[in-house]
Length: 175
Length: 106
Image (tube, rainbow over all chains, first blue to last red; front, top):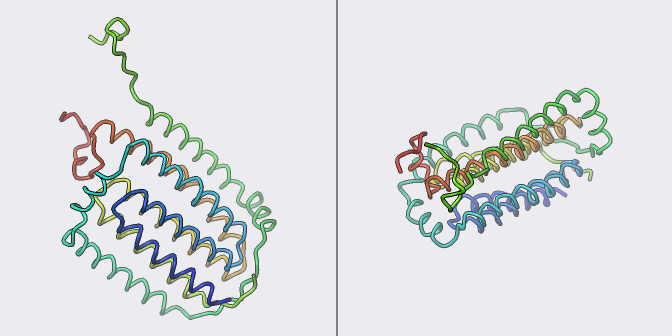
């Protein structure tokens, strides 16, 4: 069963690298879906089948579809990928890449200094999650509900555009 | 699925994905790609939580992932609305063009 984890991890890393290097937005989003699916397989391996399903439904389903809708509405296509080709040259990403990999090396070192423990994975079923979620974590659920409400209202308010009247009789008086 | 796995490798994978997301935020100039990279970072944080929950066989890791998920959904909806508004006002998604907060140059 171990080998499944390594395969899924390799797929996740490769597709994430492709996400951050693709020029065309839709290609990047498709690789992002592959990355989320690989992470969902790892969740399943870690004994969290409910969360694996949520990862597929919400991340690879809802959030990426939202991104694709925005790409379609903004008409990002060939010009964007040409633009990206000029923006994404070696001098742009070399220094940030080196700095990010230095931080990654430090993080890997810190993880490696921890005592290595082999975990025997037992499945935590959705019932245990639900009992804990609506028991001790109930206040968190209510706060998440408020956050989602604020997100909906914020998106609706920010996303609205000013109505344009092309005829002069219909224009509101602003002067 | 019952199996044995070294917890270090899962944390390593989460760290690598987080570093890739951080790199994506820094190297891209298109604001849409930066939002995608932020999503990768949130997802890797969730992976670390799930791994920690599996290590101690508790449900708390999965609950934290649910909170991260709802936060990511709210963040993406507001962020995409902002991106659409920016594109309609500036006709570009280049973050270097957006350095002035009051966009009344045009």
